[in-house]
Amino acid sequence: MPILQVDSLRKSYGSLTAVDGITFAVEKGECYGLLGPNGAGKTTTIRMLYGYTPRDAGRLQLFGLDIDEQLRQIKSRIGVCQQEDSLDPDLSVRQNLVGFARYFSIPQTVAEQRADELLQFFALTSRASDNVRVLSGGLKRRLMLARALVNAPELVILDEPTTGLDPQSRQLLWQKLAELKEQGITILLTTHYMEEAERLCDRLVIVDHGQILVEGEPAKLVREQVGQSVLEIAAPDAEILDILKKEDCRVETLGKRLLVYLQDGDELFLRLTRQLGTANCTLRPASLEDLFLKLTGRELRE
Amino acid sequence: MKLPPLAPISFRCLRVWQRNFEIYRQNWKISFVPPLLEPLLYILAFGVGLAVMVGEFELQGRTLSYTRFIAPALVAVAIMYNAFFETTYNSFVRMYYQKTFDALLATPLNLEEIILGELLWGATKSLIATLLMGGMISLFGLFDYPGALLLIPLALLGGLCFAAFGMICTALVPGIETFNLPIFLGITPMFLFSGTFFPLQNLPGWAQGLAQLLPLTHLVALVRGSALHLWSGGMWLSLLYLLVFAALLLPLAIKLMVRRILH
Image (cartoon, rainbow over all chains, first blue to last red; front, side, top):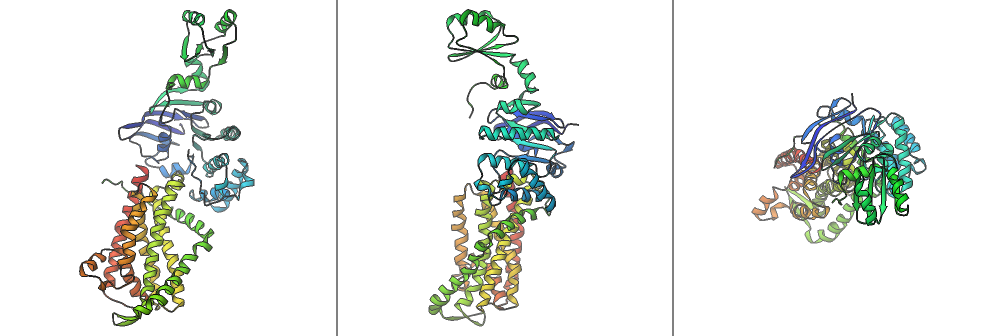
């Protein structure tokens, strides 16, 4: 039985369809990614999962329980880390954790012990009595995540957990999320950082305009849909274009740059560099970002 | 206007009350100052400055000093202010800027419980203000006991009424600046024309009728009647008015907030 089962989920705001029939399932212990550009419907989907946003249609089951019948029980078993900072600015770091535990009817002594464990885990112990107003963005995020874990949830829902963080904070959070996964906690994550998804997600979906475009394991998806590697050619001349026309491969033109998607091997790359020199050619492995852009396009959003 | 049905409400609303109470307790030294000092200022201004011009006058067969006349009204006004400002500005800040309700919605609490917790807290602020102000006023011998003890349940009832009124404003305003409108059109006229600073009988007949529509009029009547032992049959009607007001506005406030936040 999957931990989370989403069936034909739909939500519209007036004439705008935010979520347009999304179906997926998250298995116990896996990290599942929900990827998509801004406005793709990721946050709306997440918010429907814990009953924040009422859905228009579709079925939602968590831990095998129907959300319409047992929302309260479901909510006591999940942890949600929202995109926006919703920490209590009137309370200290530790009070934010202990106070939050009360909403789950966790006894005071258990809550305090749990808070101290989480402070330790997220390297916040030295800031325990600080007011949250003075925390940096990275520390706030860590505290948000710690707070989402205060009820020892079986499923953690993270909405863009590292957006706006510096590389150091991001690395630390990724490391902590990987540790949580090792502890057997199921994670559902939205992001538009491809590196994050590649690193953490066992499986993922890419959504756009409220619909799922593709689902699967990230490495496998990239291999199937994009290829093995990408050859980037800066400022290509007519000779190169001529050669490429004869080759059986997908070529994308980005202004003064060419992207050549290679299915297998570096044979074409070797041939090209032998004929033309390597100056303007770079060969790199195909990435999730290539897949993402292929599926959602390169146009700016919003 | 279509309003959503209410979800079941449990004891969990008290957790929200508890959160607000805990923060209030942390700042109690600052929070306690206004309700203690305010009556002193009023008694000084009206008792020393204005009372000289007004002198003593007769009300329901009793001779009253002006200070004695307005002292209960000050408590009634404080009941209104404390609840109304708690569920307008303070609740709005928690809802909109601090995203407190968003965070709480990811816990076993539902929105109905969160809002009810806020409303109960608003009424509690009214009660605290009443105890502090009432105590201070009693030191000057301006209240009659045991009648003045009725101010405790009245503070809760009046507090709930004005907390609900405030929360309805919070559910409807586009931004925090818009609270000026209900204050200017509702709170300030009530402050002035609810029998607070002069008896309603001084108003022309049509204005007396209008004043009877205002909740503060009835709260002032009940608080003054109890604190000064000026009992009258009309107090039962005032009590009925506030009970009906609370019974109608509390569920409406919760429903409007649910509509605002979730839909």
